[in-house]
Every structure is written in C-alpha cells, then in structure tokens.
Image 1 (cartoon, each protein chain N blue to C red):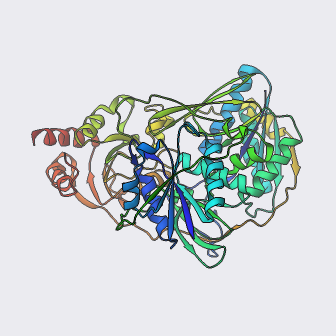
Image 2 (cartoon, rainbow over the protein chains, first blue to last red):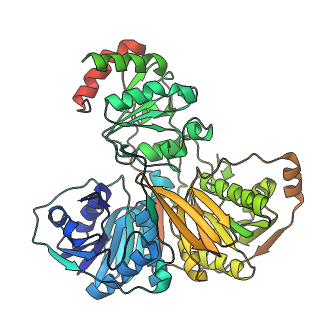
Length: 319
Length: 250
C-alpha cells in the first residue's frame, strides 16, 4: 500500500506546505510514502523528506521534463500511481497543487477533493474526509469512493510534524508524456527581488479601510520591516486601488499562516477571516471595540492606528 | 473573438455564515446572492477583450431559475447572450458541471472560455481543467493578466513571487483571479437592455460522482473576545511586552 505526494521545492528545501501535506499523508496509514519531486536529483532534499516520513523519492529530472507544465506533471503523477499501485495521490492545496491534481482527476476520470484537512481510509475504496468550503469558513464532511483517492491538503490547516526517519530510496523516474501534455508550460521570469512572500511570512502587518488611503501605508511598511514581516491588506484596500491585489489577504487573495497577524483598521469581514484564520496569533488595532475582528483576535488595542503604530515603531526602535 | 464566461450564483455572506438545520446548505434566509469576485473579473475581462478586438460575450450559469438574476447582472455589464443550464437547485459535482458546460461549448464556436479560478462556495478548483479535458483544449488557471491576439493568448500569473507566463493556442480555457482588472459598474442603458434580454434555457444531466457531500458545518468556533491591552498609544508598552512574549521581536 502506498501513497504519492507531489512535493514542491522552496529553493533547496521542500516547501513548508508540502511538509504539511506529507504530515497528513502519514495519517492514511500506508507503509510507503512516495514524494514526487521535479528537480535535478543532485538537489533533492531526501534527508528532510525522510524526516517527514517519506520512504521513496521519485525524481523527475529537467532532462525528462523541464520547468512547470501542469498537465505533464499530472500525467507523471498518474503514471507513477499506476506503476506503484498507489491508493492515494495528494498535493498541497496551492495554485500548483490544486491545478495539477485537477488535471490528474480529469486524466483518470476520478473525483478530486480540494483543500482537505482530514482524510481517513474507511475500508476498500472508501475514504472519509473533511474539506474546506468557502475558503475554510465552512467544513464539508464527505465520502470519496474511488480506486485512487485524489486530494489536496489545505495549506493553513495541518501543522508540519516530523517523525523518526526511516531509510529513504531515491528513484530517477522518466515519465511517458504525450505532445499535448507539454502545450501549456510556464516561462518563469525573475520575481520581485528579495521580498518576503505574503503566504510564508512570519509576521504580517494588515491594513484595512482604517488606513484611510494609498498614502497611509508608510508606517505599516516601517513596522513590518522592523518585525521582519510584510504588509497584507483587506479587499476594500485593493478594490479602492490603494495597494496592488497581490497584497490582499482573504478568500480571493492570499491565505496566510504567520506567527503573528497584526490587523490594523480591519473590521474583519468573513472573507478576510478566511485568509487570516491560519495565523497563530492575531492582534487587532481598531477604533471600534465591537468590530468583528475582535472575535478572532487574541489581543486588541482599542485606538486609532495612526497614533498607535507610530508609537509602536518608536518603542521598537528605542529597544 | 467569441467568448463564453461561466458564472455561479452563490449566497452573499457578510459578517457570518450559517448552515441549515439539515446541514446540507448555507442558510440563505438573511442573505442576498451574487457571483464571486473572480467571476466578476472574468465578465469584465471578456467585455474588455471584445471592446478591443471585436466579437461577442456569452454568459452561462448552471443553477436554479433564480440564477437568471446573476445572468442579467452580466448582461448589464456588456455580455450579449445568456444561457441558463437549469437545475432544480441541487448541487452538481465538478465532473457533471464540466460535462454540461462542454455540451454548450460544442454547440457553438467559441474561441475562449473564461471561468473564475474557483467557485466561492464549493471551492472545487477543477471545473475549468475538467472542461478543457472534455474539449481537448489547453487550459491555464489562476490567471491575473491576459493578452489576446488572433494567434493565441499569453496568460500570466504570479507564483511565490515569480511571474509565470503561459502561451496558449486558441481555442482555450482560462480561469482568472480577482486583480486581473477592476470591474466596471453597470450603466443604466446596460441594465435596461439586460432586463429585456431573452435567456436561453436547457436542462443539463446530473450524475452521481465519487465524492459525496454528507454535511456542512461551521468549524468549531475559535470565536472568543480579544484581551484588550489598552487604549490608543498608551497601550504600546503592553503591546511590546506581548510581542516579546509571542517571540516575534527580532
């Protein structure tokens, strides 16, 4: 019995979201956990993967398939699933993970459950699962009947937990691809240099309507920098054009999982909560003690962010 | 350029979300209905493309008769034709939904089908991809920038701070995300035209799928009331102490 997990890389290491997916994969109780990695085999983080329960690493090298091509990645996973007799194929619920598993579902004609938080084998071809709806504002209890369970793991729901590692075998795999699998492939260009990503930031300083306008964000930027974090914003801020959409935290923006989310001038609409519920701690700064965000925050300062944040920045600089 | 945009009627959830007593649906007694921001942007993108390059926009939804309200909303923004794949209101799974849309696409000659990246309610993240496989067309998902020429499309998105560009031949399926544009508000003439427009109807075929919903529930609440550290700038020393305690100070 084996499961296969698509593992994304973050530089030389497995992406944190993939370690979360592997942590969930271990709960399926299979003896063999295969990690599928698209990378040069010289750079495969086999030791770290073993720390998260991986017993086999299937490496697809650039010579076989160079770069990201969703349908080709899916064809590779589907082929490996057949070869290894996998009973489940999963990935982290990222843009790529959901896209690739959707292709696996379409290729195999099997159902795919996106953004699961719990998956439990229930005998034979049956799995019981819990998955996110409304970006995690609701849970769906569902039953999947399929020879191979296809699913992704919600990126903000399962904490990555290491195990006592077993030995790990690395296999170089050459996928069988059709020409049509390679029609759609990503040409990657250098991103914004050196920035901390919103999705993986340790600290996020959030700004909402209370910031007041496009020119109100400088103190938030300064505070974020002092805390080694980044600025995130609510939907109203991007709809007003005060900040670019890539900074939006929420159901239609980015889901964040920081140690601390400092929500400033954000009322806490439910679509915003969907994006920040994965934060370990939330502190709200808000003029309104009745704002919904206070029902989700651990701590609050009641007051105007335009006074509190500069004072906080000054206090941190004085330390 | 003939474009089909697929939208979905979903409850407008504001401050809270609740489930009906039988656990099967979102409680909509107190809510209105809308389409997701991704889909608002898909409609806008289609209208902008045809304003530049000519052609027309059709809008499609799979849902109950009441979803005509959402079709009219898209007509008011510039879509010229509306198609209702009418259901009795019960949920269609992603496989049946993709098959039903594919049947409509095959009956016409579209160059491009746009969808939102994921439905706001079910969040299945797969209807666009399954539709593309049904049709044998290429697909790109989560797109935040689109340039269309008669030869094809360049679709861009950002992934972990790196921009990805995809070149696709036409016809193609593209799923878009909010942020690709800023949707316009409907004009008065647009609204009047939408009100009078005919809506084509057909009845799609539903089939059981291997993933079956048992119940919906609101997550065991982490709702509580925050500990208030103080008021205004006077609260800063206490705030710094808490930040220190949480281990987030560098």
